[in-house]
Structures are given as structure tokens and as C-alpha cells.
Length: 218
Image (cartoon, rainbow, N blue to C red; front, side, top):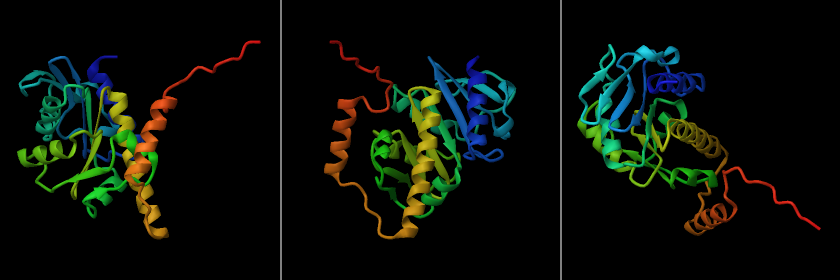
């Protein structure tokens, strides 16, 4: 599967999961000095290879019939800041967007939140597609795998396209969890000590990684 096809496939999956609606959102993957990114005005739930364009890291055009997404500066800025990032996913997922309309930060209520690096920051509002928005989001993403965008949506990154998609899905689940927990009573975020214990346990037990069963021999 080509990188343009991978981006289109990721967009379709995110739409199937309810994180992308209509033309709202964008997806990209970095391949060396090139970036494959969804085009402007693409209906993401039915995206195909021809709906994805390829640009260089400086934004210059390489391949594709469409103009790239209006959030191209955001994608390219993240790649410039974070050499380890291989993909960027921006959605208007319902719970993530709702939280981004209310909170300044999504606290850690569940230990899986630490897979995103800790509490999720909400980048200050700026007009979509603007350099100001790209700067705010890049700041919010520092040492994190996801950020929220005030009154706008979410951004998730990852070493691979699959990882970025999974981080976007996890963030949406965490935002839904926050919403549901808030209706039940007082929230109980994990303390710094509890979060440190989770990280230590995850490292010791290789949490989230397939682990072969150890057999005892007699």
C-alpha cells in the first residue's frame, strides 16, 4: 500500500469510528523528506489515494491534483519540532471537541492517559489554518502524544500512522470518560505519585506490549 493510500485508509477508519465528519479534519504521514497529507475539502469518510497530496517538508508541492489541507502549517510545524513523529491526525471528534470548549487541560483520571504523556493541554483558540493556531498546538504538544484545540478539536501524533490513529482514539475515549465521570460526582485525578507508580509498573511489566509466556521446566 502506498503512503497516499495509507493516509486515505486512516482517514476512512477515523470516520468510521466517528472522529471525522464530512470534510472536517486531516491526516498526514511523513516519509523521509516528504509528507503525504489529505487534500483540502476532501470528504474523509470516502477518501481515496487521489484525495491525498504529497509535499516536501518546506511545503512545496510534489504530487497530487488537490491543494493540501488548510492546516498544512500545523502538520509541517510538528514534523519540524519532533523528528520522532511520523504521523499527525487532526479531528473534530465530538467528546474531544466538547472538552476543548470547556477545559484548559484534560486531567489524568485513568492510568491509560499516561500513554499520551500525561494531562492533555488545550491550545488557546486561534483561527483555523492560521500560523497562530499552528504555534499554539505545537506548544501544547510538547512532550505529549496529543493535544486539544480550544473550541476546535484534537491533534494526535505518533511514530507511525497506526500509532497516531490509536492516540486519537484513546484521547476521544478519555474525553468521553471525563464527561461521564463529571456527571456522577467529584472527579478524582491521579496524583503525581500515583502516575509515577503507573509508569514504573508499566516499564517493569512491558505494559501494552505482547509478552511471551514463561514456562516452568522441571
